[in-house]
Image 1: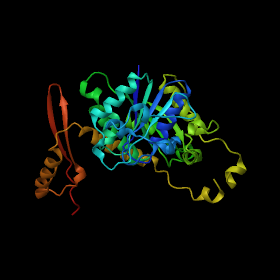
Image 2: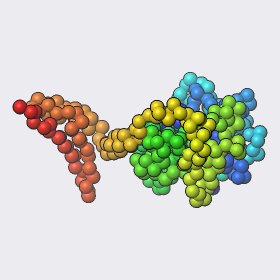
Image 3: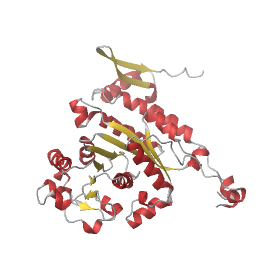
Length: 270
Length: 85
């Protein structure tokens, strides 16, 4: 059984691509066969985060238009045996992506025995975002504890409830999860930032992960090595937990509280 | 956090954010499945009301509620308090 998961948010810059890359790596680390697809036509970036930008020969639109086979366009990850990346095209023609074309690619991946297909959605609610979510069985809504991100997420939840194949057929509901990123326990403690509970209450969804604000995320992007692969990082451990929860495990949320510091460290910065 | 930052700590605004979001999200959810003409209807009704009473745009709430088998167009206008004097 293949599961199609869309990583979406509405708002840009909240960590969709970082999350797509880390979830894909985490699932592949557990032996799942995973394809991660960049739906951001014209603004390809997943390849950079995955560190395979120089190995892109064919892209998503090439496959849809029949310029190459799906096999030729799938980039095999160098770190994980069962992980494949399908890059977005850099064309300016937004109509290059069609529902029929996307369906064909997904059907071929399903026939090829993939366990998971991660669709990395572009920001906004235009065609790319629409098609990224259209065929999804599950959705990971990435949200920052910040007003515009939370509002946009709710807008996306509305679209997931009405503008997907499952919603149109009326069979099963797309399973929705929240994933909070850039979470700062210190600022939550001082009342400057909304807490996990606040966001959960407003959006009314279960939380599949809380990723603490961490300098390791930028370092990971810089190096093209998804942050989940940096085992020492809090962000990595938080993503690992999220992957486990995606697979049905029940784990308590971690990194919701600021690590305790001594008196001197608090007074003089540490 | 250093000594200076300790004294310059910013105001706790998370509760304000939460309250604002609670209201706007509820409002947007109620209009999500509403007919397209609703915003225009609201604007026109507002204009009519304003000929008689000067109400704040925030004081006018319009929504479509599903009750049993039929839909109800609900309109609520909070009138301003009488001006002093």
